[in-house]
Image 1 (cartoon, rainbow, N blue to C red):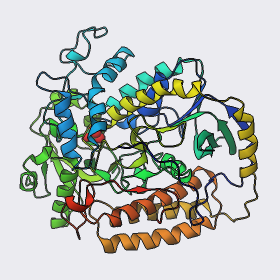
Image 2 (image 1 turned 30 degrees about the horizontal axis):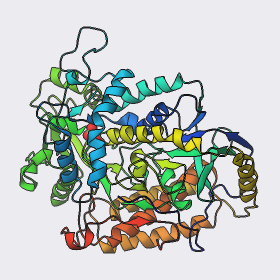
Image 3 (image 1 turned 180 degrees about the vertical axis):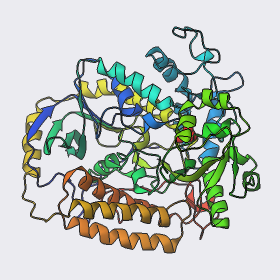
Image 4 (image 1 turned 90 degrees about the vertical axis):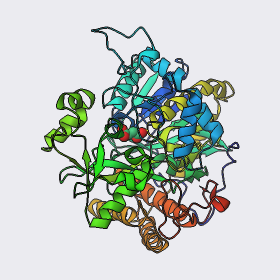
Length: 564
Ligand code: SIN
């Protein structure tokens, strides 16, 4: 992929560039680096930056809440005797449905082993083929247990039980907290990226605990805020996944890419009390079958790889099977495995299901597809650069072309590690070139820009909550697993009206900012999905069911000033 373009100038038709406008900053902090997001990508970026740097790690909730920490399945890395980075590359390209950038995927698969080696050294404890009675694993990555997940031709998923993300995040965060110059800012949402003369100067933030807007000035900002799964009614993502990073990047002129590709995980618990809990793909990797409510296995009718077909195929097949019979869920059947096996391999999933009265060893598990991962995001190059000097993005917030139209299972934590490390290592160089005198000018400049009266009235919190719920329903019904022009046009008209209404009102508090971000991203997503008149990977158009390689082997980007 080429280096990202220079940022676009703001246009008259574009949304207001500053979300914080109308709020005089109440204080200013100065740091070398601001990292936004406390998932694996953000934390590992900090760990790879020089320890002497002063870093602010900003997170919208508490440090332990992120999409990464919910990841169950594992991390893909070619360690097996018959495996190789080349095979991992081939599987990633196949799942990506012709839209992966091969050079970037090559970086991902080649750098997988060293990053895994490194995090093991930092204390991450993955399951091993044979676990010694006690003590550390001196034998290194060669001894890690390898499992299979959908669309992988080899066993290459390393895991820590069925709570891999939590193990990795907990261990890396513990290391991070031992760094004396890392300042954690919890319950803080970033509103705007501050940019002057094409260079990043920091961010404006809203501190939920004090209700204040503050400026965090820094020469480097790394966006690792995750995706925008909260745009959909059912999602495995935590409540914080509202695409704030993509939106502050977009408002600063950075292009967003591949927004139409939203991945739905095939097997999410469908229970009256819980429709967000993931039943890991690893369960199908261990032999689970999918059945319709008549008890019939159906995946072999849809794809030769049956339950282990690429994720987009499995989700769509379940959706089709549910619609064929008018059902609202299907079954996942792992009853062929013993209770002891299931408790040992999937302790968290087994326990959670049992909490809802489902004993996986003898009961089928009710499941339905739900939003899980956004392939699209802030366009970056292979070093996480965005086109604005000093502004980087990595993890789910970024889009560097590795996932194409459909992410291969267990490539996402890996992406956060590989590109977080690359950014962390590059930061030193950027800071060597900085001009520290700039900060005082930046403070005056941005304080003046933000400190303008905002006479707009506000909407009540419950009105905004209602609008958010409607937005999530609209996106699920009209821009979800199966899309049509008519449905998306309807969604677009509704979103345009909602956007105009919100523009006439001043945002209040975190939820107000989030709602505006979700609406902006929803409008951009619909625009991209309408334009792509074909079906590819996670983007399926009932009115254009075929893949059109002659016209559509290309990424779509959207930048400030483009028509939505
Ligand atoms: C899962 O455990 O099924 C999720 C893995 C992933 O999203 O890559």
